[in-house]
Length: 153
Image: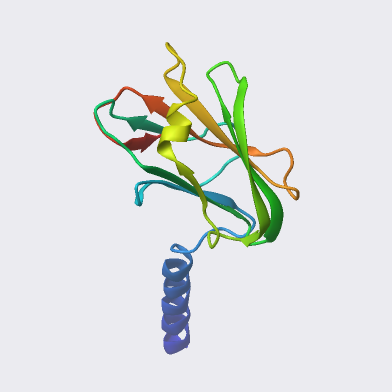
């Protein structure tokens, strides 16, 4: 009997450790990269608590990459919308074809994002949506004027 209890406890501990490193089922997740450096990697809570990425004004970035996973589903009609601090739509980019998980990134030239930044507007909000998820989700805010690339809530 002691062997059975000991074996069961070891099995439970092993499963707990194993599942601690997996993404929750049904969770939407986002990854954001600046010049191939990951600055955001998290599950989204749909409560409007999108992470903020602080960008140093002296740094020059070439590329912004967004990867979005809708619970591992294959989706079509992906779109990234950029809004200002007042939630005014500045621009939307559409991505054709189907995508599954993080396999098909949405890539932008950073200068195209910077062209949307107006005087006095220090934050640009990025939103993701698709044909299967038309209500969309605020995935991150780019905050201009910081000391380094950091992500925070």
